[in-house]
Length: 437
Image 1: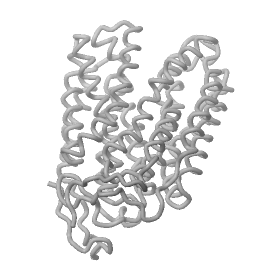
Image 2: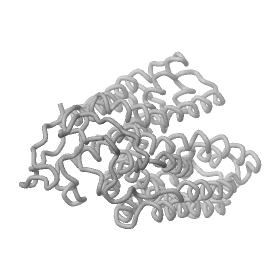
Image 3: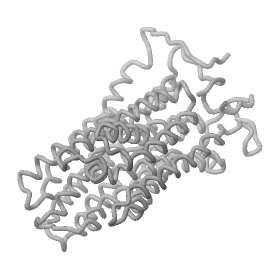
């Protein structure tokens, strides 16, 4: 017998005991690697008249490389985690990320930009992706009864990482403003401590693990996959490509504002430079909170409905942003965009688990992180080129808003794979599933 919702019992030998401590460990790990979103603090410092004195293009290059490397790390980390377990992969990823930051601290002049790119971009970016995928795949196995909420929590720490890192990085840079990169040394050590502390409690549930009293849903707006897909089987379905496209476009339109939020707040909404920096810091709270909020909401609305709402809200807000001369209106619009941007990262892991099962979630979702890298690489240059030196914010945000609204068609047409896809019935479930309504 199966139902769309489950009831929970709490026997003395409850196998779920202690699983929330693993969530705490995941948050610590994600807080450490989530510091990457505080790059704008370094971006500003590196462009000033300091020992580095980089151009705008040079100062943005390390971050661009970091985002590009995330996919490589997450793909390999996801595959290895499915075979070796979560703890060693998370420990290695956290260590590599921290070491990359420490290496970046040795770049002291423009001719040493390559050290910054190698350390922060290549090495830290790889370590970030390697570690990032671990808690997402692991916690879905521990919490099949709360998949949406738990994946939101799993990545919320990443979104909040910049909230913690930004003021600390600013304080460290102010200690020695002539050499801002030295701040990566204490930050790297701090990241290592947090990552090791968090990853040390990671483990997969035991064989045969089940939540007492909970029965997988086979009907309703959110339900479990009819089979446990392997990586190769998932890649043979159109759904994997549709979901990756949804993630790519959600990142592309959201990061368009993220990359220009500080200058837009000043030029459009009339914020002072100090106030704009504070607003951008506040927006990071919505980036983190959106990962929990939308993952939770998707459990009621259905995953694809949630994504359609995220893209639609971003589209409308982006169309309005260049006309938001009122500071309060700009803050509201920006907060919504950040909320939906973060929501994509909180909701997509649960969606992949629904569609393809959680047994090989590391490899399957690790590949889908390609959407993050693609969106992070193509979004900022597009919006920067559209706005241009003439500060044509209307053109830039209108184009991105239209892209978001057109993209709504993707979640509308994306349905769960049928169990007989690839010409065979699932060995776990012999009954055909009904597509999402």
